[in-house]
Image (cartoon, rainbow, N blue to C red):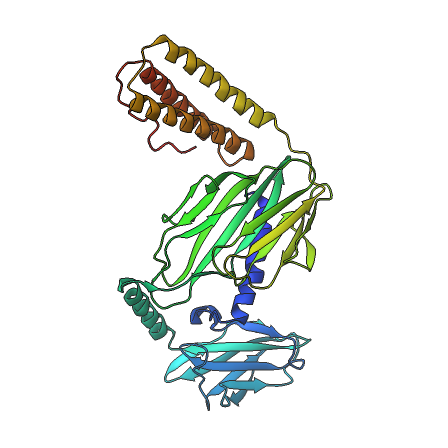
Length: 410
């Protein structure tokens, strides 16, 4: 992924992450402890300090809390909701909140009192005990036998499209979420990419249980509690200046976001995204961004692309001509020898065709920029050697196929 796509991706992570906190995905206590969160609904100069034990919901009432602003300290006591309120604090002042719970001193991060609106601060007691209990529960859940259940696509699920020269690439980040406390057995997660997708590859960080065969992504279960993150890239092969992309989801999608780079006035619309907006990355690249309502399993996301730049066919033509040349040589070599055993010959021919397909996919990957020149050259050399071996075997009577190219990925 190039720099501008990375910057946009980071922005999308932030947006979807905030959405997750607003729903049922409780943040880890250590992530919220001591943090000051802007609260525009509060009056100017108001700071509330909420004190909880181990996590949200375990409020501590009747707890003394102090807030120090520029060396001056004020004290308040938490109510039934665990909140202590401090009013009329001087805007722009440097402050810190503190409380002592059962001998444990809780201190917030330093914060600046806003001149407009207020702040909400959370102090969490017994963090060490909460972390130890969570670690124990996770270990027990992983050790238990998986149960029947379901997974969904959650907060981090997004699709980003960008152009490299005239090549349109799509990056998928999928958050496969198991909200149960134990592993769930759902069978494999299978996602069929759009029909025009070529050269699909997994990206770094995807689990070992994930694989791509052609345009199909498979992630084997069972799925651990929490989120399994899968990332992939493919090139969209289109013709003409308009193209419709249809992505069907195998499971329900809770949250999702789409961003497509706007090059040469490229337009994006979708019946699932009535409201779309433009966002600009730090380097000035403009993306059309949208999101929509949750989608049930089996539903489809449709992207209608228009004003697309013309897509060059030079690389794919070279790849096809190269494959035909190799095929022609193979035919000449095979005619020079005696006829092999029918079953063995069929197996060799089938393997030959598979390797030719891999050679073409390799050319596409090179064109899409998803493979380095060094890796391209090494794989191409290996594939040609395997093809040479197979043609040689086709030329030898009674040869048993050895396969060639075992483990070679194109």
